[in-house]
Image 1 (cartoon, rainbow, N blue to C red):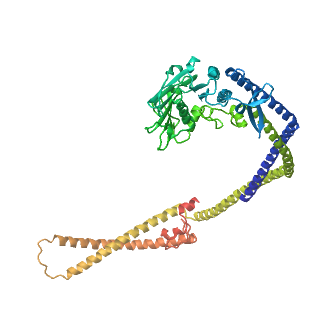
Image 2 (cartoon, rainbow, N blue to C red):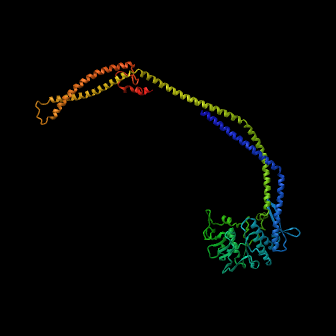
Image 3 (cartoon, rainbow, N blue to C red):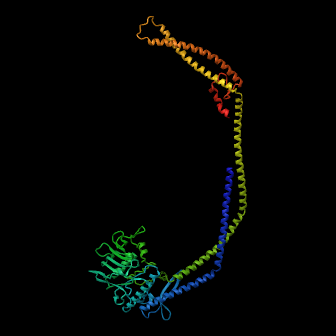
Length: 609
């Protein structure tokens, strides 16, 4: 039965695997058929979709170019009236959007802004490009310009800062402009700070506290504090949320604040930043939440640079198991993530370098497009076109390989067509196995019953033998007489043991009497003869008791002979079997039950059986 069950289970498991494989093949055929049909449908409209994407691409490029051309032209003509309009040319180089920034001559030809025009136009367009980049690059809206007005005629400086002020206000950009012009005469909206003092004797900053203009959560830089930084022992430049100007004569340390910002946010720090005679330079920048971002440059120590963020009470900020304090040469990730004043496409968008004031115009056309995100929409559309073509290629491969796979799957499915009939055969085999199992169980029960009947037969034969032996037993009166006889026999046995004991005592007494006869004729006079008299009296009593016992023994012997004759007759009548246990006995051992009871069960058990 175990072998049959094992074989049936193994076949069932094999069929189940085949059934699962068939279901998988059917599901795969359905899925592959659907995918192939979809792929054929997409391939059918391939040319129409590609033409539509190309049309959208051209429209998006023209729309973006027109908007930025208008913005840059307005800014340039506001500062430099009469300048030629700005023209943007968007093309593709090696699959990347490329932007050329030019101005258009009256005859329609183009001039390169950087190579074919003066510094004033270059500065104005560079400032406008920085504003656009800060907004389009999705970074912090902060802009620091170092002498951005250096090429502009003094009479047009006011227009330059008016455009900067208007653009910063509209775009929500905080600006810090470093200039040698006295900008206080141009606008009352600027927050203006002045450099005072001489480099030899020490310089400082005159700056009005701008704290009331800020709220705690508003983004932006509240102040810049320099401690032992070049010419500054301890100076604080307060900043407002709008446009801020730091003015003063040349060579007074205005650009030190720009270099400090580049050290904090770009990691561009040198030992020359440290004030002569001191061991470390510290730059502190006030940020939202009344926190302070601190940068320390410490020459000949490790780490040489340390960035840390502090609460208002001076403690280092710790949030979510992270301590905001990091040493090294590179700006820590947490500083870039929190304040988002970082380079874009490896260009310093936020903080202009004094020695390299031209922004973006000297870069490659593809980098200009990437930084300004101009052509980004068109780039997305081109990506869509590339994706469409890649998908069409995949669809062609899917149709080609899918049809081959469908043929193979259908052949596999044809091989499994007899699986249902095999499952029916397995069901019949399982039913037959159940019948065999039931018959086996019945046979085992019959065998058990046969063994029970055999045992009953053996017990019945023993019961019959006991019944026959019991039927041959004498009558109750005879059994009672026999019992009395046995009791008398036991009494005679007890008396015999007493006689033996008395005989031994008598023999001892005779020995004592013989010893007494051997005593001298004359006995010394005893003072006390009581014990001797007692002994004589006891001897006399023993002789009398011995005579009585001898009489009884003679009588018992006569009765024993009579009982032995009766027992011999009883054994002869029962066929030499014990009337109580059915064992073979003789007249001599009939009463010795232990001598023959071991050959049979107890009489009570035999009678019960």
